[in-house]
Length: 379
Image 1: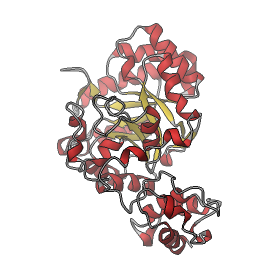
Image 2: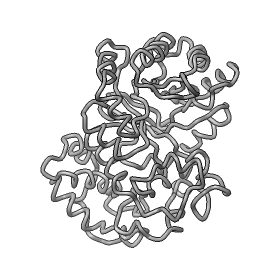
Image 3: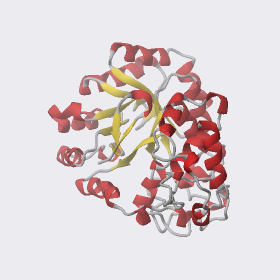
């Protein structure tokens, strides 16, 4: 298993996490076998947003004395008062459900402010006592870090701007990133994904991921497979379906992403998920699918590493990623980004302008110019 830092939390997560939603309603023996498989594979991050008591109890029972071997994303405001997976901002109700979660697991590593997708959601969290309750939970040690979940890049950017969260759970996949920001991508899963609506990488989404890297806000990913539609020959919006490995790799190559949460309900599905670690670069490559679309990506680095190898040993995708972040505010580049750039074995200053990378780039990125720009900004 590979591990990444989750933003500024100081915690390191497996790049493949376990989304536990699909274990809801399953017998304990199945939950136990799936949890055991995850731990055996080195998975150390579980998402438990489900409000039902039985599924929470089953996961805790399956973990047993191994609770401290995993980090749990527990969601504040997830309830089932009116229907399964309901949302509440009513503090007595919120406290009832979350404090039950605390009772079961003892503490929650990442207390996630649940589902901030709309103006109403935002006000329900930040203009009531909800956010105060979350901060109190952290002061008490009941939650170790504050996060939130969202599917809306505009609202997520606004939440990050409050300075309260240390990480977020966000829906990231190639199809969602091609929709305009004003499109409710989550609603698109309830119908056929519309290829005609794609307009190239949405700048609002791209800016959110870059902002999170700049602010050191770690991202965990949901909807990686688009509820299975992206890997389905029948439902994919592309000329051919993506593979699971391609979907995972796409998400993991976005800035600030620490872990991809895959919904597994059986041991075999866990084992299939971690096979990503065994794939070749060719098997992970998602750019062939992108090239079936009209070329709205020209000039934009998608961090696919087709430009490699560099004769000087430069990690071109990493340099481009840090450059994109620095360009958000060149006069105030975060020290962490400068540190990451300085930690590269080779950087933009080592570029000899041979042009081999630009010949291989599928999207016409001006790599030589970018290397010079990075050298100018970072020194």
